[in-house]
Image (cartoon, rainbow, N blue to C red):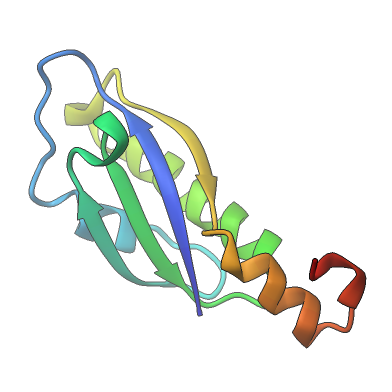
Amino acid sequence: MYLVHVHMRRPAGASVPEEIGSWVADAAVPGGVEHVAVHTAACGHPVLGVFLLAGRLEEAEEAALTACRRMLDRRPELAGWRVVEGHVPLLAPVYDALVYGDPANVD
């Protein structure tokens, strides 16, 4: 399981809907979204912590971004919102390097 932080931008004055986590979790992505933690003002903007199953780090990041983009496309009340970036916290690349046998990336 991976945790991907998806940073969002919202229109000025827009609040974060209470349902946003379940809206992301409802998006059909490979492996499925297991859970979403909503941080309303992390880093000065909303950050969605998307927990999902994936075979590799890159797949997890792409699935989380896809889930968030699908959610934005399907929710007219989020007009003006956008995905800024999505990434796994820094420890995951070290873990992948150890698991998949690429010790050159462990420095």
